[in-house]
Image 1 (cartoon, rainbow, N blue to C red):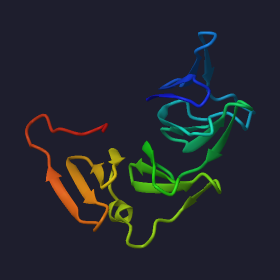
Image 2: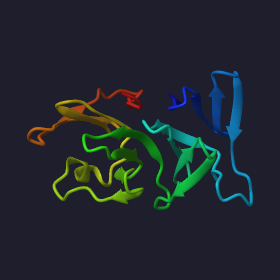
Image 3: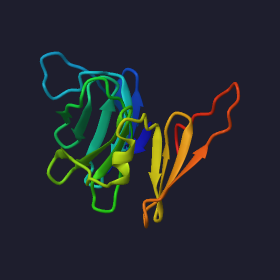
Image 4: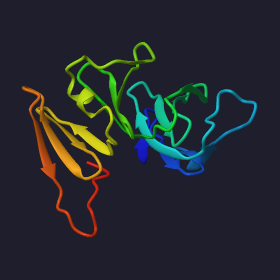
Length: 178
C-alpha cells in the first residue's frame, strides 16, 4: 500500500521494509530490521499501512504483527498479534477506534489507550471472527466485507447481513480492495 502521512510524506509498503519519501527533499528513507535495536520493525514484508490524523503511521508486517511508527522520534512500537495472523486493512469507525481486517476476522484497536479491545457481544464484526477478511469499507449506512469468495453488505441500522455470491468460474474472483 501507499499512504500519505501527517507530515505530507509518502509512505510505501514493500517486501523489503517501509520506505518514506520526503516530498520536500525528494529523499527516500528505508526502515527495516536493525538487530539489537528494539525500536525497528523486525519483519521487512510490510502488508498494510494506515496514516493517523496525529501523524503516526500504523504498519503491519506479514509475520511480526502490527507496529506504530512515530515520525517525530523515528521509532517503532510493536503490538504483537496471535501467531499466523496477517493484517490486510485498517478503517476508523465512528468512535475513533481502528477496525482491522485480518486472516482471522477482525480486530479492534483503541489508539486512545494503545490497546486491542473486544468488540461488543452482538457486534457485526464478531460474526466474521473465523473468516479471512480480505477487505472492507465502512460507509454511512453499511459495512461492506469481502471474504475469500463472498461479498457481504451489512446494514448498520439493523445489522441485517446480505450475502452476495461472486460469479463462479475458472478464474474465481477475489476482492482485494474497496
